[in-house]
Length: 170
Image: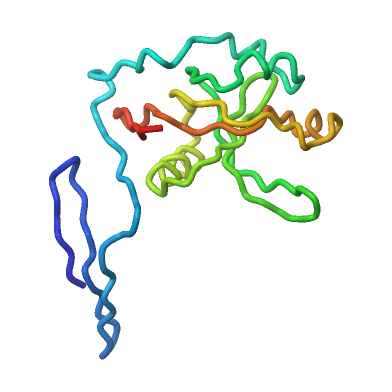
């Protein structure tokens, strides 16, 4: 295997090729992967556009969800889980941020942030960070929404994990 070590924006490696038996497999550059920005948590303060909302008052009911529509807000001490949801006969895996009365499914495409969420689940660490509310679960029936305690989908903007603030530009 041949890899290059980089020191910016943080220490990481890029694999160029892997030798397997007599075959050499070129890996190449990652396509479209945005590396998250890391900064020590003590040196990080949440961006001003993330509001403080009373997350204990949010429920799967549409009136409380409309109050946070299109908002970026802070989340403290939420449990992160990896769930499989059956929608219309299809099973879809999601990470979920579980609050007291509602859970939000994470609509994330960034591989680095998905790796951080996976680590949080495996280590049982709470979610401390900021999310942007992206969609209300209006396509789901009220019974199904309440059974899942679904509040819809969010995108993760930043999370405090492992002593660092991990940020993704939304």
